[in-house]
Amino acid sequence: MRTLLLALLLLTACNSSRLSSAPPGSYLVVLDKSDATLRMIEPNSGHVRDLAPTGIGPHEGVAAPDGTLVVVSDYGDQATLGHTLTVFDPFARHVCATIDLSPHTRPHGIAFLDQRSTVLVTSETSKALLVVDLRARKVTRVIPTEAELSHMLAVTPDKTRVFTANMRGNSVSAIELESGKLLKVIETGKEPEAIAVSPDGNEVWVGHNGDDKIVVLDAHTLAKKAEFPCGKKPIRIAFVPNGKLALVSCADSGELAIIDTRSRTEHKRIALFAQPVPPDHKPGDPLPPSLPIGVLCDHDGRYAYVACNAANEVAVIDLSKLELSGYIPTGKQPDGMAWLYKREGYNNPDGALWH
Image 1 (spheres, one colour):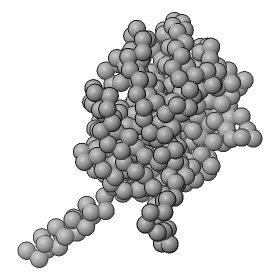
Image 2 (spheres, rainbow, N blue to C red; image 1 turned 90 degrees about the vertical axis):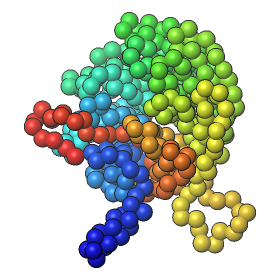
Image 3 (spheres, one colour; image 1 turned 60 degrees about the vertical axis):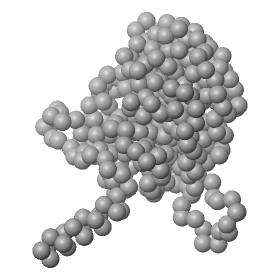
């Protein structure tokens, strides 16, 4: 009996320190811009499984749908125009390739077009989308967006269309992927950056840094369906897997806005502050800024993760309660994130399984 009681007490103690309840084999990949590193984090404990170098200024990353690779866009910094992709292999636990995109520079938004061999990435300076063959390690196709500073991108679930948020063009470019045809450049508002396609593929949500609003486009007709205000500088948007909620990181107000997608009304805002709060902080004084940017949901819709750029941490949000669960320390200036998990029954070509 005493042994059983001790075991129960130990289990309770372990559970009380858990930040989330992600299934085994799940990892949160976080990119630290100033450190030029990729860290692979066990999301329940915050333990860093792997830390790997990237190119200068890693801004966005994407995990292969089969869970075998992570690809990072090396954007650069104020002094350096980034022009590479970093490819990380979680089986081998190291960087397995660096792909030079030259003459294209400032790669940013990125998405996989298949299971593990082809990615689509924006090039701000080329005003284009680049199709990159990871095996051949080269750009195989250049698709013009015909707009200034194409920054983030969003691909429909069926991989037939892609949309780019053109920050300097104050617009969204809609492109048919198979033909590469530019369907339309849609004027949406001031400085669009956040962009996401709804899980059912019917809507495109666009956040605007310049006028603090979200515009909803019909993904098929490209018509504007709705427009409504959000928090200050709605810089990233992520949908929960069932599509009922949209999560918007509001950089300048230091909040995560949770929006009901059907009514398009704000359900809740969660304040995100730099942790720990300074010991000399006085009630009523402003708390240290967190600058939330990247936002990501796990594949089960249990938890969301928000990269707090100025606080050097990731906030963990319990989506069942819509409450802050805790913080995970990171390197300097976390931004882009990816969700990596082991596919059941998938074997690495070399015969190894990772977990």
